[in-house]
Every structure is written in C-alpha cells, then in structure tokens.
Image (tube, rainbow, N blue to C red; front, side):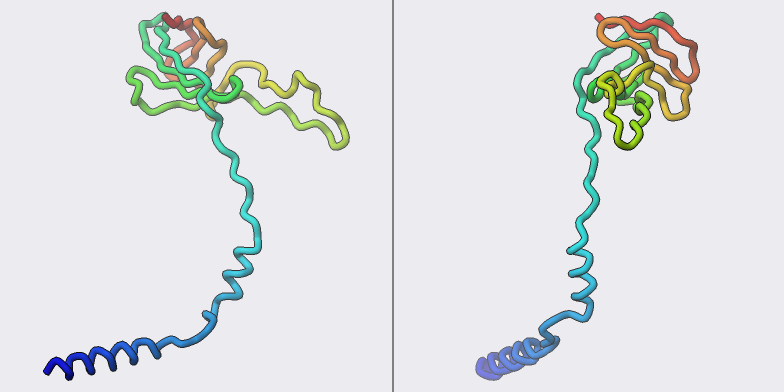
Length: 143
C-alpha cells in the first residue's frame, strides 16, 4: 500500500513538472520595454521645519506646521488631529530661456495662500497674521 502511494505521488509530481515548460513567457517583450523606460523622478513633499501652536484674537487655537524654507504650511484649527489646510507661496515666474534667475526670486514672497484663496498666512515666529475661510484676518500669538 505504501509503495502505491509513493508511486502515485511520484507520477503526479512528474506530470506537474512537465506542465508549462516554455522558456519565455509570451509577454516578456512588453515587460522588458516597460523596464527599459526610466520612471519619472518623484518630487518629495517639503519637510516640516517647525511647528507652533497659536492663540488668535478671537480665542481660536491653531496648530501650524511650517514646511520647507517658508514655502508652505499646514494649518489645523482646534484639535491637533483636525484636517489640515495647506497654504503655499506662489511660485516665482521661471526666467526666460538663457537668462539667469535673480537670487531674490528663489525665495517665495508674499503671504501663503490656500488653493481656493480663502485661507492666508503671513509671518512666522511668535506672531502671525491669519485669515481663515470663515473668519476675517486676525493676529495670532504663540507662547
């Protein structure tokens, strides 16, 4: 009985080993072409450079994460786990071909604005000016 089971197992393994014996898959050419094209470089989001909690004139508490070289910020109203509103500086216009970019144009200028333009942030450090979507512009202070 044991010999029959071993013989059956050996024959079934031999039959399975004979299946799909092709050397190359049918779509290998497509995969090689995709692998040859280099993927586009991925731009990482800016790093958090500082974090601060502010109390505004109307007693609202906001948590702000400043990103990069003052190029963007995430604003959370109330709780630190609230949904963040991203405000960012307008990108300076690219210089014409063959012209060198002035050093001052490398840094963003003006207040940081949200995509819809309803939220703005200016300043950094202990005092900022903040305009939220549902409120007017107000001064906010950090401890």
